[in-house]
Amino acid sequence: MFSPLVSELIQALRVLPGVGPKSAQRMALHLLERNRAGGMRLGDVLLQAMTDIGHCQTCRTLTEEPVCRLCANTARDRGLLCVVESPADVLAIEQSGSYRGLYFVLAGHLSPLDGIGPRELGIPDLMERLGQGEVRELILATNATVEGEATAHYIRESCRESGLQVTRIAHGVPLGGELEGVDSHTLARALNQRQLL
Image 1: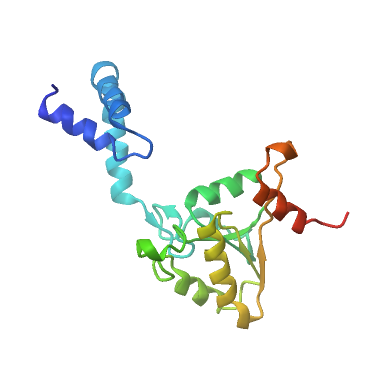
Image 2 (image 1 turned 60 degrees about the vertical axis):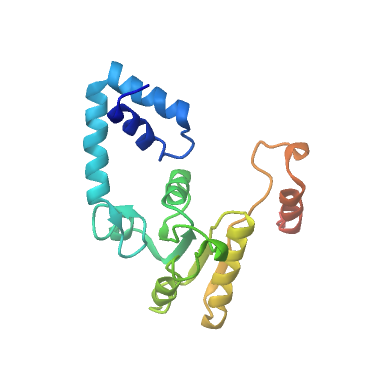
């Protein structure tokens, strides 16, 4: 049996997604036995991140500044606003190198059973931002899940009277994918959203 502090460290590591009891134990023992300097650095950075990182006042992504670097960048196209579920989605889109607009991060999706409604996702803030008239196209890039689709539908309906152009990112067969490996829902969507060449 481990000492109380070692046990507490193991339990603390279990807060991370995908980390069960064995993985947490392995990480804790590795840090204590083989990499105390790395553990100290991890502790320092974790404490600083938990203290200093908040949400951008404009797009709600994670940042230690009041306004994140993307929102502060005057070279971005302020007429394009892409709505995503998480800061990880912002990173994925940025890594594609194909988008030069701004973002709005919901930090989740509608889930009434979990008590997550429009207010928790900042949708009133989004509507206020859209009401300022700077955005000409709202791009809905929520996940292709039931919850993501419901969230996109809710936002689209909320914008119906605004006259704003609202688009949805395409979903379908991945590049390099084979049709036999694609699920029927994705394949049906790809067929229904086919484009003229």
